[in-house]
Image: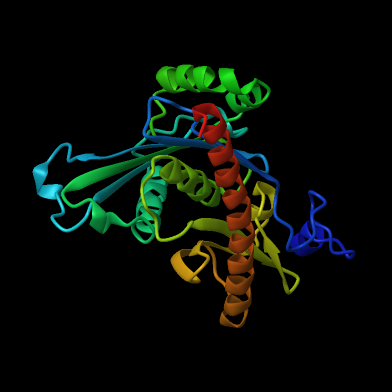
Length: 279
């Protein structure tokens, strides 16, 4: 019954998209001048802010120093008001810790850490609703000011989900990719992520919250699209092995679609920077 609710006989989903259609992706780079790199990204109604610091000297225990490459430190947080459920989400809760680890593993596969031995790169990401709706309605000149006040007030120095409507991991990865590029840190390729599910023998790309919570079998995949290298593959539910290859192919196709959008965002940002600097 969940399948009939999530996918109509005409092939349309709850939000009117077709099975392979992605949610609308909007993004802006360089939104927070105090960081080495930053980006704000909306993937459907899921909204994330990513901030990058580094490469810089190691902080904290020197025993963590890697002599042949940089250490990547990732922290993920979800704002209290990012969902309809109002509860405290401490930075050290299990879900945030797990997400932070997944982000770390993803970017270790993409960032050229060997160029920065004995150093550290910090990637912080966060998710929330009311603020981002307000910020997006502002002109470009005011966005950075509001982001600074938001970060200062809520201490969101990480990729942060600001509003959650499914695909949190994917949105964080895509936002953090733009922030890393904005910081000028070399990467092997864009690293793009998407969540896919399986309903009525049909793979659905870029799941929203209603689809994720509808009991469908799903997986999240992060991809370096040019070489087809999978940086991370995560499954939270059982899936028959006969469907695995189909879902992976659908996820890789969706990630390649996301990479085209991110590439357009980077090119537009470079054009804006060139105009501002007179180059």
